[in-house]
Image 1 (cartoon, rainbow, N blue to C red):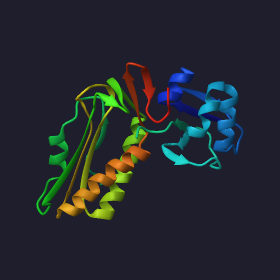
Image 2 (image 1 turned 45 degrees about the horizontal axis):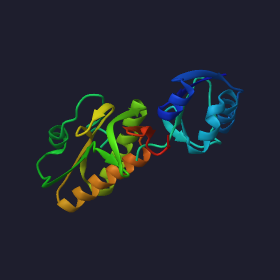
Image 3 (image 1 turned 45 degrees about the vertical axis):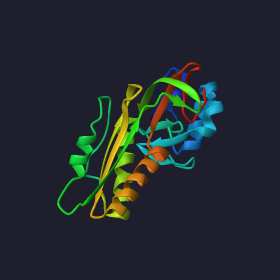
Amino acid sequence: MQIAVRYFAVARERLKLEGESLEVAAGATVGAVMDALVARHAGLGPMRAHLRVAVNQDFVGDDHVVADGDEVALIPPVAGGAGGLVRVQDAALSLDEVVRAVSGPGLGGIVTFTGVVRDSSQGKRVERLEYEAYVEMAEKVIRALVTEVEAETGARIAVLHRIGKLAIGDLAVVIAAAAAHRAEAFTACRAVIDRLKEHAPIWKKEFGDDGAVWVGMGP
């Protein structure tokens, strides 16, 4: 049977491939797929321990059995409600847009988070950033965690994340959380950005005096 394999960020760059078709035996597991890919691409070997695997946009373990026609994505470490505003885009972000999306009667506290590209990282100068994402999956993951946090806090949440080339001072992510009281809004806003940075397949590449590095993976 045939499956489609997709590569992102450092994996795509090192293999010089965005994707390929792979023939596997019926009943093959994700572990077997990874073994086959490492055998085909020696460059994957050193990265394997750092990669997560998503099948049809859901994270799975090595024992997951793939089916004919499945899409298997190799997800490098990410840079560190369901019906609301969640979007990953290559255009400039608007804080006003997320605030408008969560505003409403009875929501007395609105808390926002704005992530801005800074000119240094770990003591080194940064010239610019590039963000890459598995856009379809990133939006799905963010919607899921927004739904999760909304259920925990009772807040209403909106998220916009930028991809592409960003200059110093550009907005990389904007989040707004609204709730009846400020405590829930603060909690929701912080929970969303923390979980987004941990789980969403969005990668950050820093460009500086020493060249370029994928954050979380090394040069």
